[in-house]
Amino acid sequence: SQQGEEDPQALSIQEGENATMNCSYKTSINNLQWYRQNSGRGLVHLILIRSNEREKHSGRLRVTLDTSKKSSSLLITASRAADTASYFCSTPGTALIFGKGTTLSVSS
Amino acid sequence: EPEVTQTPSHQVTQMGQEVILRCVPISNHLYFYWYRQILGQKVEFLVSFYNNEISEKSEIFDDQFSVERPDGSNFTLKIRSTKLEDSAMYFCASSERLAGNNEQFFGPGTRLTVL
Image 1: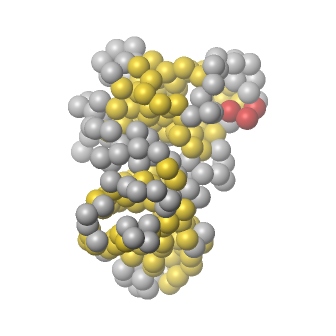
Image 2: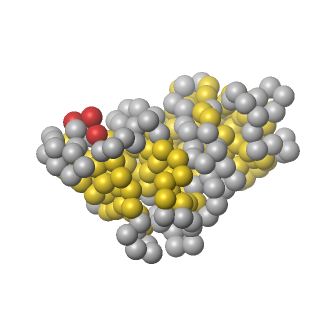
């Protein structure tokens, strides 16, 4: 299992704006997953992108993957206050290893 | 929609006491996990469990910790002699297949407070 590193560590935006978070990792992967954690709660799976995919959409989420740069980005469009949470990427093995995440704060 | 459940939601114990945290994974899932999160820190992997044995464990999962699937539905984490530094949120998770190829579903967590 290996850890992804998210960037930035914190992001503050207004409702309706887009939020972009980045993830970098070190070795080759089969897939990369993004999770969200609301304060003090368990993690919720958002999206999985496989190594042969370059972009994937799910509702207001858009994930890209660049295996040559070993990086991924998560874009949340038209953000809402309910999107306020911490976001993590992980490149799993038998378990998930999480980095410190990006803490997104969306104010109305 | 099926979900992972955990009990209790909050456990307070005295240092040196044994605690058992309980989880009911999603019924058709085969892989089970425990994670912990100390207040203000990142979520840390403890252990994964498959086919009635530990598949992988982290450095945190020392001899004070054990896991068990006592029946067909429950998955437990036991801490034999709790320390102050064991105070954390403990999350159970399950997946249909190995986490590497499939999403994990997390429970709401048990907040353990060691006094």
